[in-house]
Amino acid sequence: QVQLVESGGGTVQPGGSLRLSCAASGFIFDSYFMSWHRQAPGKDRELVGTVSWSGITTTYADSVKGRFIISRDNAKNTVDLQMNSLKPEDTAVYYCAARMVGANEINYWGQGTQVTVSS
Image 1 (cartoon, helix red, strand yellow):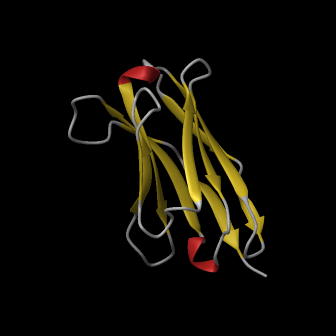
Image 2 (cartoon, rainbow, N blue to C red):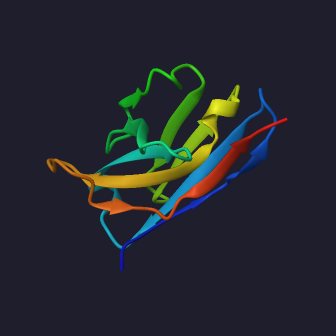
Image 3 (tube, one colour):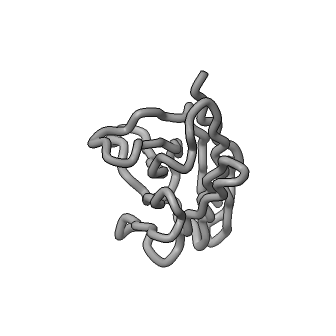
């Protein structure tokens, strides 16, 4: 049974930090690109960033570049999103996702975790 379980969401003040984690099970983790996405109320889901199967290559949306860091641990089957200098516009439900190497579409989604940035 495939599972992606996010954790670490919560409420933080502007300028603060949060670290999200996604625990994967039920598939060969290091055969998949991993990514983080977010969806704010009334908006479409957007890509936050990706990490290659090896963890060497990462990409980020312009809106989070320089503030967010994606990392993965293939020994623990986890992918993390370190979020720094948070802004109110970062408020959203954050999802992790897995895409098999060579596939064009995401294969698996997590259930999401809420991040609220508010004073």
